[in-house]
Image 1: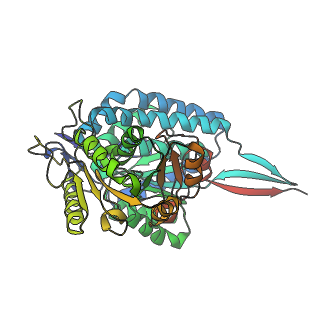
Image 2 (image 1 turned 90 degrees about the horizontal axis):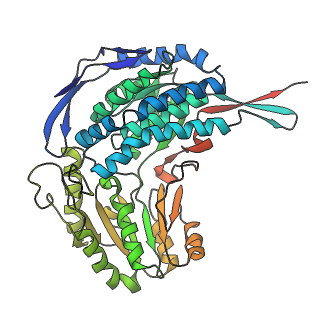
Image 3 (image 1 turned 90 degrees about the vertical axis):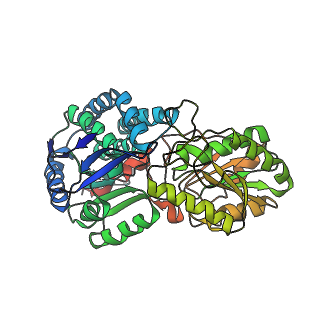
Length: 471
């Protein structure tokens, strides 16, 4: 049992004013593995006060001074890769292979922020005026449970690189990862108050951040419903807001696609992070003329995917993060059957050989785009294959969604695939690849979010343009 009894405010580990304890579970065994004492409104106020006081000094630091601090952060976080891996597998249930990537990612995004800062120009000429990019102020950073350490480091490193100070509210379900990251950041000797980490509930700590007049900007990753609440509650002070929200991403397989290449890529997109990914390609669009080929190919491939114990090296899909999330996925699988979708593979219940834990059978339905399982974000390894008639029909189906975060096009002719990709309404579209480019902007359109993260676009989100005209 690990009992976490502190938060981090103004350069120190302190005991929260809040007294509520939240239980931490191992998703693979359903056992309680620890508790975390949650921050409350008083703690949030203290953290914001500390960040505001630190802003005056940090915002005036030079680029070289910020780079030096970020490099210390990178070194300290990278040194804790193995500890992060253990926490990720234990409290989140990520399979070992995915967990290793997730444990390396926090240091990687700090390195990317350093590179962005090194290349960033804070002053440019616009005619007779000088435009100076200035830090917006104190940033409220609210992170989810599906990649806790990575989101903390990505948002914080970018905010600090821009000259902002921060108050971070991580998910209470990821407290072990948060503790490891916090200890690393403390070791990096970051000036007091520049970052503050307060683990607490969204409706408590999060709402203080949303409404507080001393928070100038919010960066949130999570559900669309919560994102809408943040926009509404932060409107009184006109906070700058970056939201990375839900998705129902299409994978469009064109009629000239190589089936042996397309099926593994489509499943990798759909089942990434055990299906608990906002960018997951959960709608697979296949040409009706080749549906009879693709159905058995997907059924066979999914049948080879192992779901269950995250510590088994053969496992590709780990358990859902919580009983609530497991039940949500089971309810959607039942709904798919009730809606009349054809169950191609998978179904309700735990995977074979898994007597306990929140494991889910990797599931693929065949249905149409008006079904709820094709329109609502499930956040689990449940995919819907949707047949289409021609390219125009494929585009109509792909774009017939409230979301627009990610998409993928798979085809034999790259030029044609790119033409299709350019017509998909999405913040990012990948063509015949799942490769991630960290220098490019990432974010959604429609109800998948506002603004962008990553690269210079992510840095600009923490800056305001000030125009100087000198006579």
